[in-house]
Length: 439
Image (cartoon, rainbow, N blue to C red; front, side, top):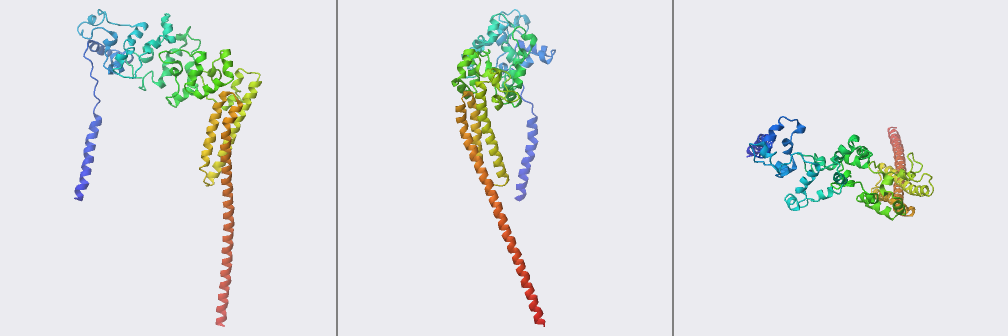
């Protein structure tokens, strides 16, 4: 019985090892090609083309083909005319060969603007892309006769269009900046249209670009998050705060209540962009308020002479810097106590409270109210001071224990010495008694 129990799992392992390689070696099921004239002709033509110019080979991976749409759904023609090319395309009134930019928008919109049709594939899919496009800077330029504007295929591709959530798609979040740069980074292409073509290069160096492209944080904003997708257009000066505020809501609300909001509006200044920039947005630092830093305070852009602006910046910087110093000194004391083996886990909650207060204080700077910033920082000073007091007590407790250990060790050592001396005296007395007995 014991022998059979050993053989049964062995047989199971052998069976698994025999079948799994064969299962994994099976080729994936091939996509069944359509049986129409377009396929029969163009698949043969693709054999003579390089990879870039192959039409149907790319289309087999297209989201439209995977949803059951064929060439004729976009290009028209007669897909059943197997024998005559002219009947299939050139002499068919419905056939569309080279499609103009305006015709392209209408062709894509034929399906994508029809809620009833698109609902077959998704109940949540948007169907306003075409109407949005005509409100965009691209669409408005196209209406004016400028053909050097982006249309559907410029962004999404032509015969190999992938789903937007496919990482290989040209409009996947992390690929959007590169897709936009294909036009916007070309000086020759954008000549006479835009004054600068540095947007992509600036974005790559920005805090947003590093988050999206280097750290692959998909939630970080790309071009379309600020400019829009199909209705893409530069934000108006008056709406930049709302664009930035869609992510940085508290910063926006604080600035809107500040005394500077009305000043910016009167001067026609964009709110967030005036201090932080647009495409090249650097990571904010406390030195933005530090008049004496190497780069100088951001306020210097407008307030070269300092005056009241410098006074306010100095006050705000002092609050933030003082809290940061207080927090850092608390960390040092806690680390010392921890290294010495003291139980200080509760003090880390104080540190976290102080750190959160520091973050809130940095955000509260957008109020440009020194009293409000101080009140926001106050809980941080309380928490960091509590942490320092607790750490100092732990260090004092350590010193007390060390002193107590020294005293106890000294007493024990002294007792051992006394005991040793006592034993020696006792041994001498014993030897003396033995000598006396012999005499």
